[in-house]
Image (cartoon, rainbow, N blue to C red; front, side):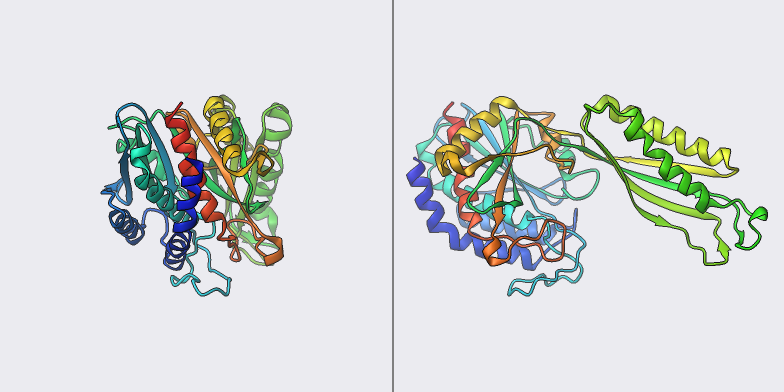
Length: 394
């Protein structure tokens, strides 16, 4: 079966690359993927698969039925959205939408899954069970398209026994893939602080309540949440990346705006930390004569790979690419809304290597120069097809 899959993956590779380039050149932001979803639907119909459109508005699903289709169901997921980044690559398929770019590889995920779909549709008489394809919107933006797809019934009719997701990784050389069992990625929450004081002249600070000074104390003090409240055994990150104090050299502003991110890998600690952050920021501001409004936008939960599903997927990957080309992944404080699926269904989220130093393809995701070695698409399409068929046979 592997030889059949590899042959088809090679045969369809050029088409998958062209699909990826089309999507890359026409990126759409989270929850605005109308044309992308339409294009994916067209590609599915070309190979004889009828999709269900407008799931969670801009998502879609499809079902590939093998022999005895109700025996077992495996779900495969890709994401559709791009990022608000201006592309700096000088390539023929550069983004046509100014300020919007596929800088996280979702174009590759979608193209790869379309290649996988074509392989599985071709081989549908050779396996038992069904494959559910999930093309979801809004991975990059709260509340996460996965959560909306789940609310819209994507994990029902039929219910998948397992779900697999694939994501590009520019730190792993092309030709290799990575797996990690158990806890893998962090939850992600957005922290917004509005520190209020009393504006005034910089030369007469005694008549003002300086929100800049208050903010500086809050930012420094909140690092205690990590150093003195979090257990050293629990990975936690609190970072502030935006501070806006719209004063001047001689103007103390009335308000300061702060934005940051909180990451954790334990839901109980996550909830506790939210309360500590809120109480500490408010009390410091009050103690210095000001006020701090705290807004915490709760994002994705932590991502935990089901040990059995991950072991089975890794075994299939080793059979497909060779044991020497399967690497271990470390804990990752980044977040992914695939995590929502992992809390509902036995799941495995793994990485596809896309790095090629000889060709200068080394930029990290979410950067203006991110790109992939497109030979990864042939591997990504074929290996995902084999992981699905392998799991149906277990």
